[in-house]
Length: 477
Image (tube, rainbow, N blue to C red; front, side):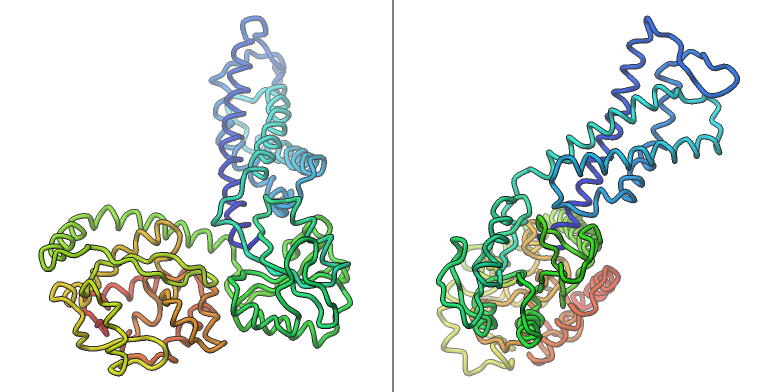
């Protein structure tokens, strides 16, 4: 499970828990109100122990109960280990968290001294009911089907004896969101498959396999690896921005610690050369989602006028869909307003000698394939606006390295491959640094600089700098 998926799951669980706590509170209050026909009094703190209890004099508690319950669930480690699916351990954690929440709530009520004291039996009933409903909701969430976008392609490194039980554990838990793309065996072991999974190569061939396959994470099983082999695997992963995980049981660490991932007994310690702040990456996705949705709605008049202009010029298609490489090399159709003649791709080879960019990228100042409307929408970056749909779909981000063409990626040097380790975007450091006035190698280094220094603040700053760059047409061709 990737860190982003885990963070997304934690945020989803918090939202679900908020709804469950509120719904359980209201259900308990309504139940207490309903039985008030024959049970009109209850035990409340204060000099007058027996006092009438109604729905109205309990509803104010929800303002305290929801944040207190969520805080206790967080402190109690309920969100720390999403793979711990054993029912008994999960229920025990929730019970402990709810017990802590009740004590914390009673302490707050002692300090606040509300005008209408709460019913103790009401609180006990709610605590019991919330423990049950939170447990049932958690089980339902963790056992839901994993969507395609949540699945991570991984490589498992190890011998038959060490890798096979690990592969079996992965197979038993599809909710972990892991797809095993293949196995890497030791150089001295002659096998073609392990646990029904094809062996893609040896440890010595790992750099070649990583460059060829779309891999998000490498898991190294076993404890008997020599330092040189460990370093070789770690370097190959770091070079391409692939997360490297290894068996950490020899460290004697508890699986409950946040920096250790647990796979049904296998504790793996992960090293990543890409952003790993899962919660911040979830906020980045939320910013992408709402930003793209707002842009798609606000830009409808621009879309309509641009489509009419393109259609009137030559009658060809309005949109141009091109296969681009996204996160870890996964291809997707990137949409643009068509700015060139219909057969532009067929004419590209004849113009290759006039390429003004270094490296595998093709750029020309006066490209004869560009139409009159195309020249305008390129200068104003209107041709890029349909990519807000790619952002909304999750294939791109508002900010990130620009998605390359697969043929360009095939000509990358190894150090340049790491720019694929983060979701591509509409804009990045390159776009606000002169775009086509920057040579290819500098462009690649700027993208890696963005990955190495990524933060939400950097995204906001780059978005703010992109606006004047687009309005002035800086470096656009």
